[in-house]
Image (cartoon, rainbow, N blue to C red):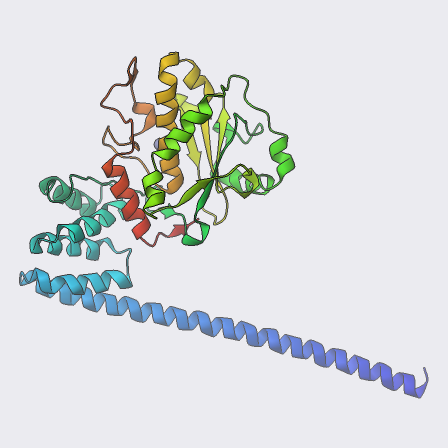
Length: 357
Ligand SMILES: [Zn+2]
């Protein structure tokens, strides 16, 4: 190697070393920045939580002195710093009742019920308030949206309007349909469903009838108030590759359920609804419109994040407990979305849920 060439080679080598050192120090700097930002966010959250606890303490002191009007702003500010604390929401609701502000009471106590397991002390007591002040609180009785003990979820504002695709009888592939479909399989399906060729390859289930589509649409329309009010905006789409909620069909489901909704906890992954065609088929023909509409409305309720109600007339009453008679349901079972379903949905979308889709 000539001297000049050796010089150039060494220079390049040095430059490369410098560049990689620079890049390393840059990435180290970026990592440090991210670390300090995370630490800052953590200390801010801690300060906010402490402030919230102080405000709640001040509120409780006023509450003990029966100064309910004075306690409300303390509890309200505390609830803002930690919206998922049912204790503060509960005391806010009770203070509101004792001050005669039933609108605020309904809001706060609905949140308590929605975010707590049904058997929790605060949820049980909040429900007693709804029973005792039925007239004042619009005769509503919300229900818990908790699943697997402590989780609840809803659509984030970025994902709205939620795009709903109602398939014309299509069945998902073997291993990903009916009893085989679970939350873990959604991740794989999520990728496939973005590919139009995958959807083109799906076949309609042989006993599916075209008129079911209209009944499902009617079930979805039962939630149109939620879209109009801006609680959870949704729209139907013809292109399944862009959809957030996809409705498919399958022969049967475990425990002879008429429908099910499968939700993964990952953001951005779709929610899958399946309706069991053979369940519909075995019932008298005149029941199909009501049946499909009711089941679809119920499953769409799950797709918004609702869980089950124990009140028979609510649309979120478990569908496997409905008795179907010649006139439709037994008239004590659910037919339509009720004010309870609406109040629960409103409270759910009022909350900062731990899982956001
Ligand atoms: Zn259900």
